[in-house]
View 1 (cartoon, rainbow, N blue to C red):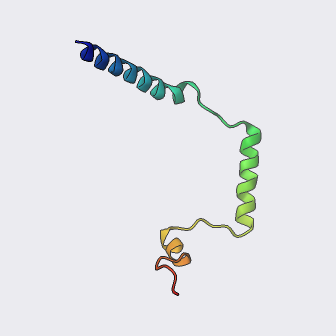
View 2: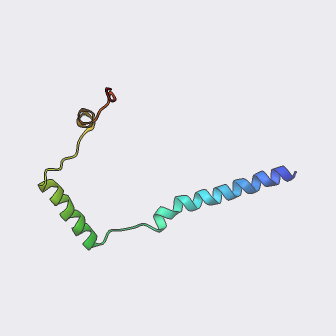
View 3: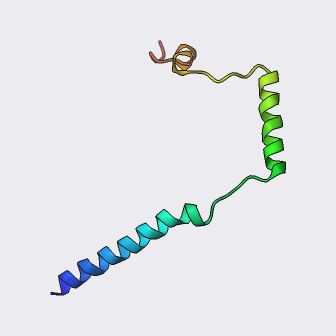
Length: 71
């Protein structure tokens, strides 16, 4: 009987923890301010001006050593 009560308490605590974890992003969301958005946009523009472009997986494989090192 004590084991069943322990399992029931464990399940209740797990469900409460799960509900809190699911509700947390909806209740405490973070939104960027206008200043943060402006800084992010200027940083993105600076990266594009300096020649940065995002690589796809084929470009990454060409640039890294996928066969290991030779002695």
